[in-house]
Length: 309
Image (tube, rainbow, N blue to C red):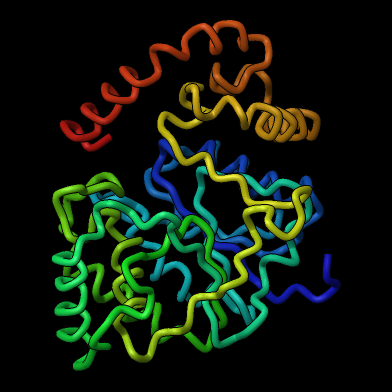
């Protein structure tokens, strides 16, 4: 790792993602990444805050209870005063670092944003939705590019690296999110909306049409394209590994369990405190329950929609 730490890693989650956040930050410390971390925590139990704090170098910012998807807090947290470094990295809390990824936490060019573009383009990004994005960006900024600088695609943002010179962009992202995302949107997937991936789509709209936005890097490396031994592993499908293993997350078993072992060995977590899916001794049951995962996830979503928890 570079001797001089230039980047703060920022993440967030409600209580359902507290275990994911613990795994994420533990993956950093396990791999020698000493970067400061800012965690936005919504409705967390005290024991989970203590466990994450025990990893060292962590600032926890309490987020007020809200039905809105916590991901909508990304721009606020990335631009908050607790971020004192030259660069800031957003990392989703349903992810882990494999190997020492310090090199990928600093961009090659301060004029660029490190974020991955979709390939192929998302099918929900229609010409009509791009027109809405352009209209809304013009209303926000007073100007907009006539054509999308990203063509017919947009960005995928579980991992972002940005220089502090772009704090004005973070503020525009925050304001635009408040304008176009309803306060009761509880998931980051709204297929009937022009902003079908909430905060992600808002950022995409700015990178497409805001004339003052940074260029998107052509050299995204955090997916292992530069070094297959070091990458950002995103547990993209639901339910998440700490909730219930599914057919898609099986490939992350050998990423997740070594992090859990590391936490247990250091006394940060007791084996009896672990959710059952994170217990090696219960792997047989977790594996057997995989066919039920889609139905369990629908039940979780319904509960959150009805009760907001």
